[in-house]
Image (tube, rainbow over all chains, first blue to last red; front, side):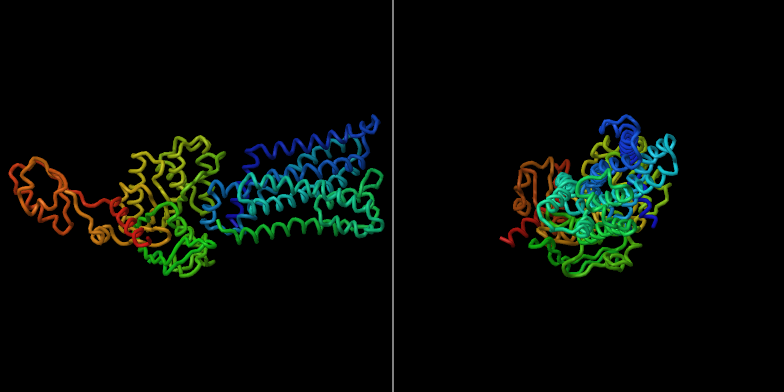
Length: 272
Length: 298
């Protein structure tokens, strides 16, 4: 237990030292505040955007940025330590591979979670003052929790990459490809499927396919809580179907636990 | 017995990294492990540390298989210095050592003590990336000494150390040894190691080509003792018994068994002004065994 905490504390302090926490928080805060105040400018209106529009545009932007940040933060977690020789050294200490993995996950996960809480939370408070807290807080709570889960899920995916890759530069390349796949290619393929195949995919089937992408899950969770007007693309089809948000959250948790278990499996088999 | 290896084999896919290794290390014994790069030294250390599994054979460290869960607690009694150690560059020396101390559940007081001992007290608040090679090596040593280990595995400990730091290092080794710690020392740098090791093991391509105490190895290698005299000059070759061993006008190469005899004869010369007797060095022994093992495999 003590060892897990030591690793987590070290990773968290690294995040503070490298200004990761600070920069991610600022990015999130600027995004959220900017979109809520000026988001409506794009559609030619001058008044403050509605809460639904804000959340909708925030989640379409976050779905690109959060996975990218999580992958950037963690792609070298293991391969970096392997290159510098500290991974071998750590494995001779009284700490198991599972404890090391969990410690890193807790430490780096806290960085992402805390940044979403502080960044988006500060925007929520500002918004609350200008409109009403009663409306802002529930919507933003859902958004902050799902953002953290999205971040954690991509951290777990980054660990798999970091344990599979033999070099840091390769890990970075794989991470970039993974990011492209989940935030762009997957959706384009889905859209193509919807347009190209008549009656190829039912609405229920579409939602089920989206479960295979944590980024889509994140959007589903946030947008299904809003009216569908602000939503476009394949999602608008999916959202009109009935989905239980609790089920979505459980599947999102699965997107954290399963990659983390796979990472542990790979780590245990890996010879250093 | 602290470490026992019995008929240990280790394969990496097709590559035979270690073949039929037998080793016994007692409490307070210092073993020198010698061999070229890729001879299997590091692999052997990783096996003893429980980072790798043996392909066949068995290992016992403190009476337990190092891979076994029960051996967990024993890891606190083991110190390890890896060969290429570059610590967390952005952390300070103090932060690095504190981190490792926490992982080993070692009292924080020892961190300051060790930093002072290895001469990093002044640099402890500087980031490791500003450290020289020698300073990094000393930080690595401090890390290995955490928690008064009963078994130390040191891979190339003196690489990058200046002569004074090397001296200090061997002093620490002697100190730990006198406290009953067993040490396995891996090294390329042969001069200077001799006085600090009890036994030596020479590896070549994963096989043990020689092992035993230095005097045993010397005896078995039958390497000659080199005697250099001064002041006798031409008179040496007139004595029949001595002329056979001559390699220079004032140099003799004699077998270990004849050493005392020859010296006695040399001392009989009135004109002798100086004499130096040099037993085969570790370096010579090493090259001798490596050569003879290569001869076998050819």
